[in-house]
Image (cartoon, rainbow, N blue to C red; front, side, top):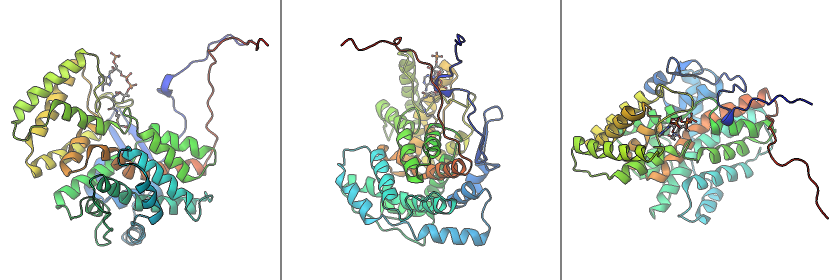
Amino acid sequence: MNTEEPEIRKGLNGVVVDTTKVSKVNPETNSLLYRGYPVQELAEKCSFEEVAYLLWHGELPTDEQNEEFCKAERSQRALEPNVKKLIDLLPTSSHPMDVCRTAASAMGASHPKAEDSSREANLAKSISLFAAFPAVVAYDQRRRRGQDVVEPREDLDYSANFLYMTFGEEQPPAVVDAFKVSMVLYAEHSFNASTFTGRVITSTLADLHSAVTGAIGALKGPLHGGANEAVMDTFEEIGIRKEESKEDAAARAKSWMEDALAQKKKVMGFGHRVYKHGDSRVPTMKAALDAMVKHYERDEILGLYDGLQAAMQEAKDIQPNLDYPTGPAFHLMGFDTPTFTPLFVASRITGWTAHIMEQAEDNALIRPLSAYSGPDERHVGK
Ligand code: CMC
């Protein structure tokens, strides 16, 4: 009998389960590369469509490839009537992530190549999910506000059209750019919980939509994607006072954080399983948040941001993660807080599907072992 205790890494912490060519997270150098390109450079120089193409194909598109790709994306943006009907059946009190999960599942069930998991079919499914998801997220926020669906505009790029479909009017370039930056930064992050979920589902040879649907479920939790909403809940709990000075807002935020930490609370938007010296995406998203604060003249938001961050730094030396600047940036753009994680979904569909295709192309069923810790063998006494 083997008496040696197996080594258990709770939460798979530190366990390397496979290789990937999609992205590289290096916490030591605080860098994140998508297919070799620093994410900061992609956020500054590329459209989100180019980044999606890069994640799926491994290379940035040529002008011709980009044109063809954008044409395909723009032609598949409308909300499918069946998906709209299904969304309308869900109560407006349901969480928008539940709406996303249902929509992704429905899109799979009605896909003409539902059971085809060839590279070609998976790529086509990825493009259609990428193209159509803004319509789902935008419509769901609108119906909660008692507003009707807005049809997509083929003359706008992905980010501008996403905002247009949500708010019913074109947004200024500064807002479109900050939104695009958030989409690029959220697109991919190696074997995080939702991506790993998608890879596990793919490893059983289930279809791409099943894997994306499962990934959406994993992303919902506040320890993962749900943190961007939770950040805004914190801001709301502290109280957003539009006319307040940045300094006063910072002081109130600081004392809120001191109380929270004294009560041993986990404050969402801080800390990361991989980055222990700061999240590489934060400086780029913080610059986008600064641009939004300037655009909307809302200095008090920055006061709350700075106050919380300073108090966390002082007390625990824990750094903000991407969800920390993204939450208030989405708020300033006009999104309702429960829509924040669905925005993450719309972006991360690109990374998830890149991983799903990678997993499918070199598959091994993901099936780890467990060490049993229940009662010894016993028998039913009758
Ligand atoms: N607030 C207060 N204390 C914290 C926090 C936080 N946000 N994060 C970590 N700590 C403390 C934690 O209490 C523990 O302290 P101690 O050793 O005294 O018990 C120590 O830091 C280590 O924390 P951990 O939870 O064991 O570390 P982990 O690597 O398992 O957790 C994490 C990473 C992201 C789950 C955690 O930092 C957390 O819960 N953060 C808040 C949720 C959040 O913002 N999630 C978004 C993650 S980034 C976006 C994404 O990829 O989805």
